Image 1: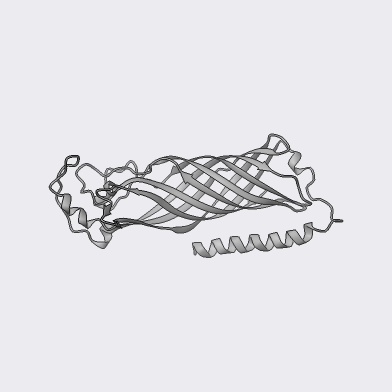
Image 2: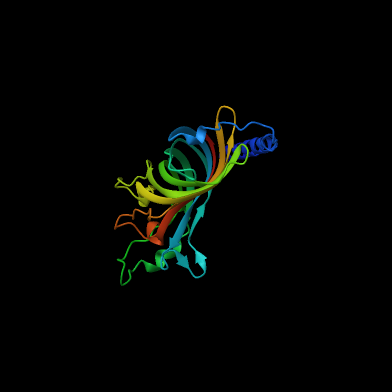
Length: 260
């Protein structure tokens, strides 16, 4: 269903862009919304489809066995929506605040049964009692509801008839409402914990199309969390899960449709 939604957004944008290009290349056609970009402040909303996964740095002892990575991530597709507030700085620069809500579900697989070899303990890790990992223990389906608050600086070119290209970059504050960071249970009880408050950077590019009543912007955005999202398992939990990873960071590619 999520992949279907993403395809619909892409196809809709392509069809609109082709139609708009055919219309806007007519030299005798009047410019649309000629004074729109002269406003100091403007507002809008957006819809987006996402492709999300994790960037993982593995612990060399518990996350790697020979040449085999013991932890794998599976990407997922999802959707989101948000609002747009734009502040015009000058003819070429705008500052944008685009708070949104993103829904995601990703999967981590832990093939870490071989860590039993460290049960007697090491110089840096205490001994533990091995357990037999079931399929339920190995797979974590991680659901996330993300409040994403990006602040972006937009640099745009001159209008070409009723279109205008732009690039943007900025920083995000992201709150994971389903992080489980406050739970006393951990992976031993099938609860995966991650950080609630996160910081990311984003880069975006797109083309703004001007119509009689609104401005439509199809764009592609990449968002990459900078901090480590791991909340370590409890001290008495065997090193099959979070101990196998040194760093876990969300990365997302978004296809966005903006209406202003």
